Image (cartoon, rainbow over the protein chains, first blue to last red):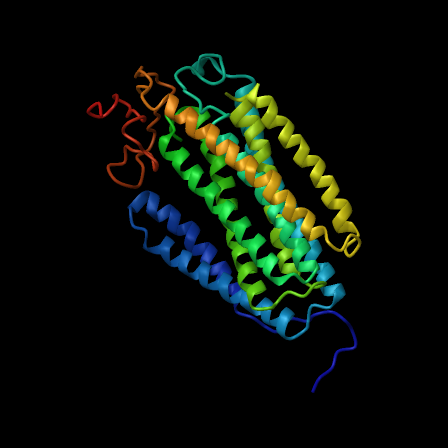
Length: 261
Length: 110
């Protein structure tokens, strides 16, 4: 049996980076084909390949870490750096959309009526559903912290309860936002107001769905005894991502919903 | 006035964030911090959500009978530079005929 004289993880060759790259190619070109030739086949194929890639790649990481013990402290440190860098890149992604929003709203053009909100736009009342959404996400930040402490203290049942509650709050937010999107008196096609509103909140909503999914995977893993009281980085990464989603919402709420109304 | 109450609740939560950092930075110290966060969840966080739910429900009832905004054919709204790749190409993804007018006006006034 081969041994290594270091604590790092030399990963076995894997096909998933390639299938992921192919998926990205098919989704992007598929999107262009859909726009011009009205068929969704290529894009759907790309989406299926993406889902298969994610499932199998992350399944392999769980096997390597939880079952085979490859995630030693230095390896875990690298994973922490990785997640922090990824979240940082997402912060910059959202910064772009906030830049677009402030660019258009701080100096509204004559075409919009020289005012913000533009003439003819009926904004949403920030103290109705948007305020409820804020309370829901803040509450989920509290419950996910409860979950973290439960895991650290080896409280299995409490960890499952609090994690479930967090995920339910995430679903509730998504349901409320979907309803808001349907009931809004303005659409994405309503000039720069509609564009900035729906692109910024839309990408945020996508991140809520991603974060909720990540937490749901953690719930399944917690139920299957993957996490120990001092090694549960998958959960910590999910919790960091969830707090990031919460903070982005706070900025969205203050800027677009409240100041921009 | 109600807004101020909500805002101070948000500020209270951010001071909780700092408390949480202190507690998690010294994992193991205060071995019952899970209990603390459980209490915060059920006494502060979830009741806060419940109050906001009530507030939303009451406000929605208040103006459930309002008519949709009047239609004015502004050129800077309802932009249709390219057809949407679904349906008749004229309706947005979350189109709601009760509150979203098309470029020519509301559909059939329902």
